[in-house]
Length: 551
Image 1 (tube, rainbow, N blue to C red):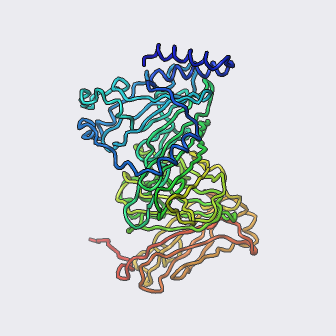
Image 2 (tube, rainbow, N blue to C red):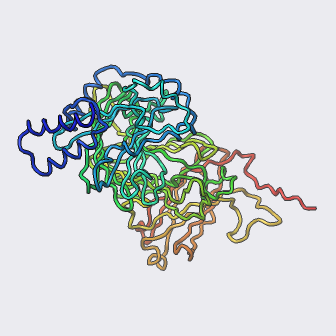
Image 3 (tube, rainbow, N blue to C red):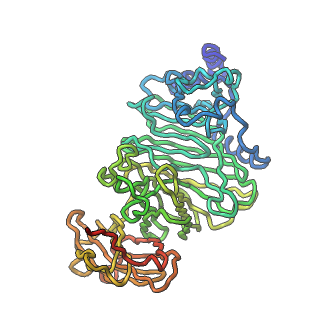
């Protein structure tokens, strides 16, 4: 249907519905404009209809892996795929004057094989029209795509979408949904970092991990001056179907998403990951093994932060372990958790390609009662910065059985700093190095006879200064080994305190050492809790080697 016929049909629909209000007239006019690229038939739609759709879908067998793409798309290189650009003249809300948002779509191709359907929704009439793929929506540039293979492929769909906000319309996107159920957003640095997902299934369980797909999106047409827009999504996989509602607030310094989902299990699920996020940690102040580059640190996130249901604040620095590690932190109705990037100093990274100092943090704030469960953290060995190796999610305690229905409401904050922080002293940084010698007296002619590993945990904020004259006490708990040479130092440059201790092994074991510490003053906790996982070297490597060659 062409645009003129569509507007004519919209006018007939308005007449049939009686006398509209001014707001309704405006909404329908805006919808007619954005639906200029929507050529499907009109269908009724709202969130309850989407929930019914997901419930019915879960009762049917899964549709399976994506159908093959035309060869010209399936064989695209990353460089060729990236050269395909959506034509901004066909963006979803291009014809709404003084608009605050616009939406463009990603082409299918390369590894993005799932054909995702897109719909435009009039929020006043609750009517939706599908946007079908057609080659004229894209500029293929020098991608080498044979567009003859795409003719008549209206069911090719799209791979995902990206959203823009004023004044950067069509120049720099602020939200992106692309691949499986992955999505990302930026803060006011306009730099993407870690990713979120709609759902994680069997991330660390027997068998292969399952990656659910968002298979369709519905976009409510916003008013011209809106700074919030609404997107609905249908999720589908072998184990579960789901209905999602995203209310996306594009604020001046951050993006905030209110997420509501309704999940319908097709079959038993061993491990359900709610509000999952995926990040990268190659090396940092605490882990230097993979930092043989010009960059002091390389990571999208430096810690897992948790605000537990009992009010305790926890900081768990991330690792790039030598073997895959999975940790589960038990909680009941957590107040929040997230993967944070708190060091925004360029000098900490010296990276003019990745701009890790600009990467946002992601904080999850549950909005309904999640009950008992665990915050899961998986850390995967990686040799560089191109592969995400950190996964975090909430796992309900109760096993998920076929036929179960679950719903979760939560808020996602994409920002440089989380929206809340502990009133107690906070972990500023974690540093590690060789131990067994007095601080300030690095090994010279003779190395220490006893091997140990030194840890320096820096704390800032809270009531540290007021507590210092009364006495600051580090409370250290270790799963194995001993903590010796414990020191407390005031560090003027960051106006905080550094806690030093050397860890000495008491056996030849190489299993991970679980470390826990918080600061106490006169019996009261004055800091958040620091958790760490250290992996001792083999006994024959617990020695210092002087590799200098003197001539």
